[in-house]
Image (tube, rainbow, N blue to C red; front, side):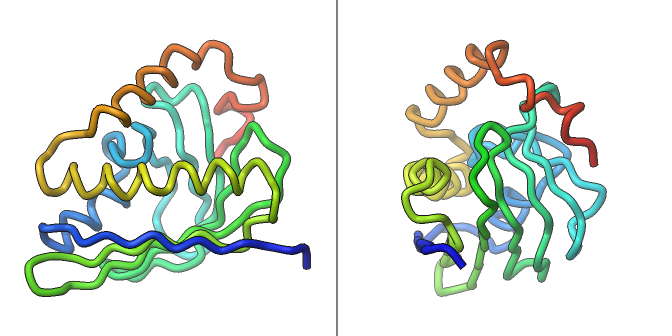
Length: 170
């Protein structure tokens, strides 16, 4: 097994566990905390494929497979950027009810040391955690995430051919 990294990001969110869970698992609209992507899957259950797609569904940025699904406490899946040839890694979301809210933990593991995927995930995770907190607590997406989503929208026509959703059916 190649040399791998693990990163853990935690935040306290003033809100219900159901509100946090909904935001990270919803499929009927974009996930604001996940860079404005929309989760596509035939069903959130172990073994099911997942695709994180652009709001219009034309670009698939992330592919994976559900590993664990225990609502509303734990959700884990494999993770691979479609524009990179790095090996897949594992992402786990853990939610724990605590006084006044939820302790949310994002765990990224089995990331190949030095890979582009590892660098991008370690840069993106703090934004995901910060945005999730803001969306659940205030209903608003922080400016930095709004700006990134705007840039992604502008860059979508320049996505690699292999990122087109027809290359990543469910």
